[in-house]
Image (cartoon, rainbow, N blue to C red):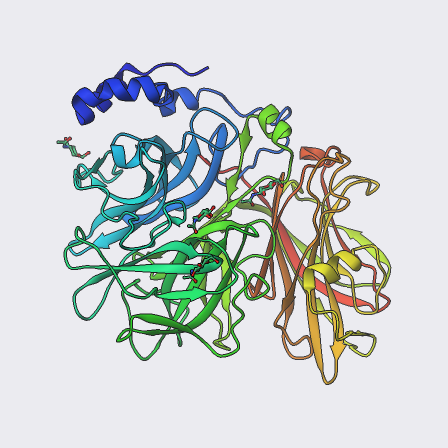
Length: 577
Ligand SMILES: *[C@@H]1O[C@H](CO)[C@@H](O)[C@H](O)[C@H]1NC(C)=O
Ligand SMILES: *[C@@H]1O[C@H](CO)[C@@H](O)[C@H](O)[C@H]1NC(C)=O
Ligand SMILES: *[C@@H]1O[C@H](CO)[C@@H](O)[C@H](O)[C@H]1NC(C)=O
Ligand SMILES: *[C@@H]1O[C@H](CO)[C@@H](O)[C@H](O)[C@H]1NC(C)=O
């Protein structure tokens, strides 16, 4: 399938001069990098491709993983991502590139960063954008060098008059940061630079994920000029027994407002968020805390949990995430990779693997103890055919079909009203793991208050469905709300990973609204509980509940009735690339 591209070859030889012959010999694969127009010549055939998404970002084919370097420049959103141009499995990694004016409809461009220098000849891995004074974007990213060491490189746009920033230039000084005997950095555990931030001393700081033995580390570097980087004596932060820290993210949030902040912002009304992706468990966690600029260390708030049993952006499939500050709308936006739950064989058969979650606005909750996330408001312009659910009582043991929407591609939000909390089951003190609790008490296990929620991507007759639901428990004089996403009945195909996901949601059902929003998109169910206090993303592969044969239900298998109000919308198909 791969067609050799003389143009690209020419481009490479311009960069590398004579070295290109060596490149040709040992890295033929990049000579065959197809251009984007060749990639996009295949069209979507929804009938044959029931798992293709209608509005979640994905290229026409092949493997994608981490979001890279998101930014806004001259009113245009840029999104880069780890991409294998040749296959539906990981390998040959380059930075693919797309742009958008609304974060919903995307235009693909040719790969922005691909192996071309010794410092990245074996791969261009993840990194982040920093906007330098004067509004000039630069990228710091991890390259894999000829000795397969992980090193950090810089690339900048070739032509700042091009709002699409189509071509990127690498500096000859690369790599700017490298492992050595002297700095004791492990060459296979040194990757994923963050967006850099500027301190009051006019020095830039950046962190890179690392580990020493099983202690995860945010390795800190400083620079006056963005070119010469000096490793700090101590990391910005570290935590024992967490293993390799991938894709760290470190950013300020406002204490008083939902507005996002520039990454360099510090001050009295600011807290900091520190997030890592754990290579050991393939899960992320974050803490909220204080950035001590004098000592250049991050201190998580008292009571923070330093492991993936702590706070997570998403309690389902969501990894290698990254935020950026959208200066045009004063918000901080989160991107995250959604992996498959199918077998590698099935991925190869369908020709693609991986997507991106809908970008989410995020901010600090009023409690100051966790973040809140919500799909960017722009996604709502895809809504059509809104169906208002008649305000009604969902009797214990009943199922109610939501008619009139395209159930395979929808945005649904329901609020549950509970009048009597007395029937809530007592929470056993040993039930501390929400995922385990959800898998023990799935959608078909009757309870007092709950399970109630949605059956999505459901077949007529309910041979297949994914259930997203709540259960409410009593714990001394308070209530505990559990949100579950149960995939165990999502597909007749037995080969998929159907792990049940769960999270506790910090909502008081006596005094606060209890709502659930789900973005349903053929093979993705992205759910937001408690108005964005807990999110769960699942990948599912129905065999019956596909396209027009998918149905949507509200259900209540508890003994107590619940009141429901809400609405469901079909979502139009976006230009997802
Ligand atoms: C830079 O981009 C602008 C806008 O696309 C274009 O008009 C101009 O020709 C480009 N300059 C170069 C040197 O390519
Ligand atoms: C460096 O990291 C790699 C990858 O995790 C690990 O296998 C190796 O043992 C580490 N080396 C040292 C000296 O810690
Ligand atoms: C890492 O583990 C090795 C072997 O157990 C030990 O010699 C070394 O001191 C440890 N390094 C640190 C920084 O703890
Ligand atoms: C992606 O999903 C596959 C299949 O479920 C799993 O084996 C793999 O560990 C996942 N990788 C990550 C990074 O989540």
